Amino acid sequence: MQCDLAGKVSLVTGAARGIGQAIAEALAANGSTVVFTDVEESSVREASDRVPGSYGKVMDVTKVNQIESVLGWIKSTLGRLDIVVNNAGINTLAHRVTIDEFPRSEWDRILAVDLTGLYEVSRASASLMKSQGSGRIINIASIAGLVPLRLQCAFVAAKAGVVNLTKAMALELGPHGILVNGIAPGSTLTEGTRKLFYGEDGSFRSSVAQMLAHIPLGRPGETREIAVAALFLADPENSYMNGHILTVDGGWTAGYAREF
Ligand SMILES: NC(=O)c1ccc[n+]([C@@H]2O[C@H](COP(=O)([O-])OP(=O)(O)OC[C@H]3O[C@@H](n4cnc5c(N)ncnc54)[C@H](O)[C@@H]3O)[C@@H](O)[C@H]2O)c1
Image 1 (cartoon, rainbow, N blue to C red):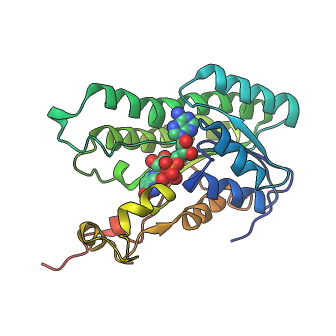
Image 2: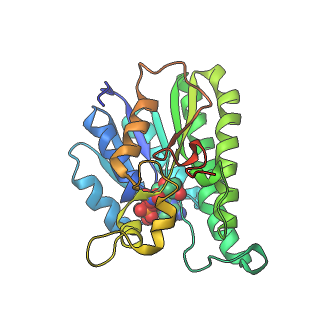
Image 3: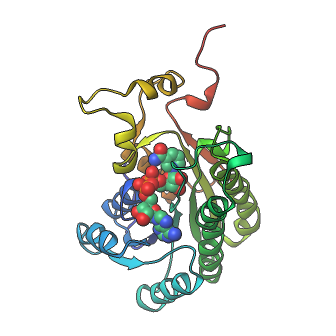
């Protein structure tokens, strides 16, 4: 997909790798000046160095002073902020346990990034966008925020929060010309998740066969397939969609992929 983002300034959180990097690259490829941000300094510089004309900044979404510093720099140096993609997110693999065993420290760690971090970046960005009278905020939720999964209570709660917060922000910010929408990816291949899916021989691990059976397309998504949805939500031509969550999951949440 192609759209005209010439003259637009975008900020993407968690842009050093995975879905965030793919979205940041897609926005830049369509003419936007992109500020790649991430908690990992060397990786974010590496990612932004691959895209001429873009910027790489360290920004931990749990650190309000870092958010204010990057937003202040954008305002003074680039003069405006048109598109914010709240992508930074974490989950846990070490604690796939029922809620009675789920450590409070993991709950706090995940909520701090996935929900509170998104709130902090959104509030700082909305203030700048309100003064312009325009903007787009795109929140990366998860299908786990629509249909809960077992053994990841913090992640499903955080992502359900992102879904409803997206809609609440759309109600509040729409009158100021700011459109707020979200994307709910299904399982998506990244450097991090690739080894969970594929064994040494390049075929799907038997442990994921059960999960893949729920996906009508029979495979996980690619980061570029999530980036296309982000471009659609950023496209100036797409000007009447507000408060919507786009699922990009190969049909996983369309219904039960089984016969009774
Ligand atoms: N990959 C999937 O299967 C999948 C499915 C559904 C939803 N999502 C969501 O998509 C988003 C991106 O996921 P991904 O798979 O690309 O993840 P990833 O782990 O590959 O990349 C996440 C990026 O966020 C950064 N990050 C982590 N904590 C941060 C913080 N405090 N501040 C700033 N940056 C931080 C990491 O350094 C990393 O670069 C997340 O919100 C995730 O929950 C992913």
